[in-house]
Amino acid sequence: MSTTSGAAGASNRPPAQRAGLAAPTTTVAFSPEQLAEVQRLQSLYPDRRGALLPVLHMAQETFGYISLPVEEYVGGLFELSPAHVHEVVTFYTLYFQQPKGRHVVAVCHNLSCYLAGSRDILAHLQRRLGIDLGETTPDGRITLQSVECLCACEAAPMVQVDDRYELNLTPDKIDRLLEGLR
Ligand code: FES
Image 1 (cartoon, rainbow, N blue to C red):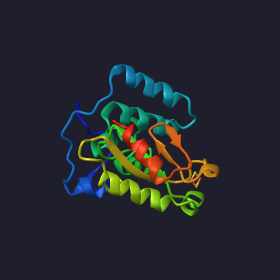
Image 2: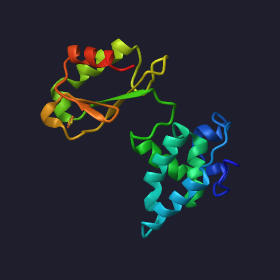
Image 3: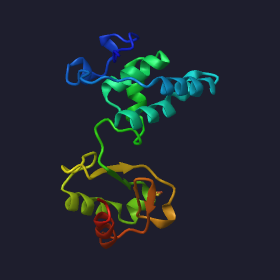
Image 4: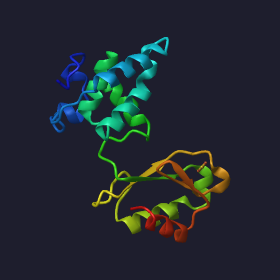
């Protein structure tokens, strides 16, 4: 199936795609069952665009991450331009634009965590993993992110590891944490 929605011209594609840096290389398409689920989700909202976020989650689970072709495909399901979808994808840290690691470590950088030493925690993680924010270790084990407040300020500094919180962190705790991530 084509990856194009037909709804968008070259002028409103993201800059990287206009420059030919990320041309579609793989087939992007939901299964018939997933398309039925898209329709069901869209029917739940007065404006069917309200279902964009859950459908993007579905796309991420299906295709691994939200590439430019995936943005274009999902945009076509909503009659939205790829540029519109791209703005949504880049706004939320839960959407990945590159293949992500088997584990995602997300360091909170907001005020409480910052005052409690999140910069040191982040620096320790970067040193131990040998990667920068937004990068994935070469073995595909861990992706490192920085995120806004995760509402666990009373236990700052904290990180989210996949779907769980790790609280009151110290460099020693980080080391033990990393050892448990395979
Ligand atoms: S500031 Fe980090 S959890 Fe709120």
